[in-house]
Image (cartoon, rainbow, N blue to C red; front, side, top):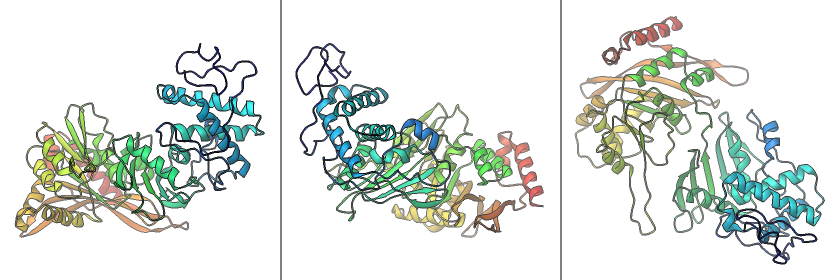
Length: 511
């Protein structure tokens, strides 16, 4: 039986199917326990608020579903939670305690999320009615969603996770929560009760992907069900309480056409990128943190032929490819004994034995770059990866450095020859000082002159100034290259006419 009454056995409740809340007999009441800290939800990471505890006045509860649909902001301003009184938190503590005493957690676990939420809302409504709490309809709806999120979701983070305009959520301890919207960081009024509640929510997030975070393992990378990247660092390494950072992904994945509308790339540049993805160029996407490398990589993969077998290797699975034949691999950290680690290099080396047609490495950080270069140069045309660098030339230098990090004792010229034979195109992404993201370079790697790698830019972003609001004004311009190095590859795939048209359109627009 889903619920258990605190007084009497009764027959009404036992007659209901398992997984449902029992009915209440005439005159029967749900009795809240005496004020005392309620225990955790049968092993769940949600921790109830002890009755009488003083919660921060600025703490937010998720809005009701109807209110969220009507008032969810579309601009960059964070929702300001309504100021809560101390009586609200005291009422919530009593309702939560009564809920824990009433509910059968083993049956709750058997229900799907929607049904479990409805069951909890029904029970909480009954508790409020029976205890005769004086609450407005708005407060009651907020209380319902607040308790449901504490039991089933991620507590105070739920309203932020529901917003699609937020790029990053940064939690610096229980009482400092920031978000990034439109490239700008803002403080919110979201608060956790204490650091323990925050840590419990962090543990709930990382446990979904088989990771753990505690004092013995205080650093963890994980992901949310929608693919959003999560990083947690807990005490004792984080001095002021657990630090949680979430890099959110939009529910509606961006396309190149949308990037054109946002001004990240020109229509002619987007056409060039489509051709690059179609003709199986080996691509490195370079950029700083938060510049949109993963988003751009997702956009480019949309132009891969659906018949190709693609294998992705990532530290935390973020890529969401639309092709039917995709194998997704993810690294694994060591266990408490320091064993069982699977590194990115091991994944890349193993995927070479899995008959891939394209290998996509979510983020190249170390010696795995050598194995990726080898794959690009030995029949896996069209492979892609991302690297942290601030320019195409710096990207090439970073690749050399990462090869050296792997302990490969190779002459510098040999390493550069491998790079030239492997990488065809470098796409540079950047986040400008006004918070906007732009594709600033599309650069070909064309060969070597002596010991120097020769590159040529096909397109650049030319900054022209800024408007009165401080937004940077600029234009994507052609460099005048009429016959790029990828021309023969485009002709092999029957794309030379489109390539010529795109280059001509860029040239005309530049004039």
